[in-house]
Image (cartoon, rainbow, N blue to C red; front, side, top):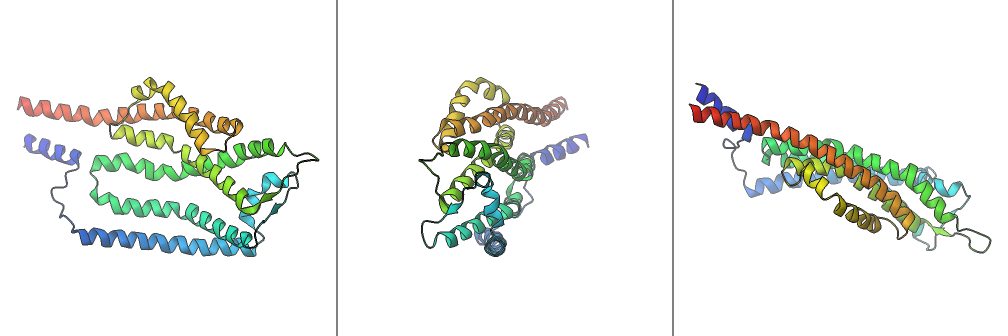
Length: 274
């Protein structure tokens, strides 16, 4: 009886799918199509709503992005006849992707979850749960910390001979690029957690390669930010802190991973003794 219980325990820990009935390719494609259609409908609805609000209610989203310029009374101009219209469309698209992202993650999770083993589900669910809050946190850090100081630094070159004339499209593109970059780098702890759970990296490896990671961090900061040392430093600093946090997260994920392994070793010892 104990041997049977041991085998059942091993089977459940592996997340065995022996009882699952394989789905044909057409069923997988049909499920994927359903998820994509649902996501596309949500994005389109949010896009239409965000674009309408932006065009009819005096640019609330663009006004929020324009805050660093308002402090210096610098207006945004458009250099082409169609630039304001397409800028509103881009704002609506960015808002739709941002607001619909949690729903997109949920649809991805519902699609891949049946194909995952239990340990794989445990490794991925923290990323699904925490990725969006961390992305928002990175964007807020960029908006409240980096952009005010960075834009104030660049606008400091204004004088009576050189006056800024910023177009709507280029200003929005730069701002969205920076916010997206900072949101992306704040995903580093969750990525570290997943890679540790899958056995690709561990805390010791991260500590050992810290000096190489610093080089990669500054290269990434140079790629993700405008070509100036000031903005690159503003991104590299949080990245270094996040890397150290990732080491702690990897240490925690490694300890969680070791507990099932020790239980499995005890089960193997019990089987050998019996």
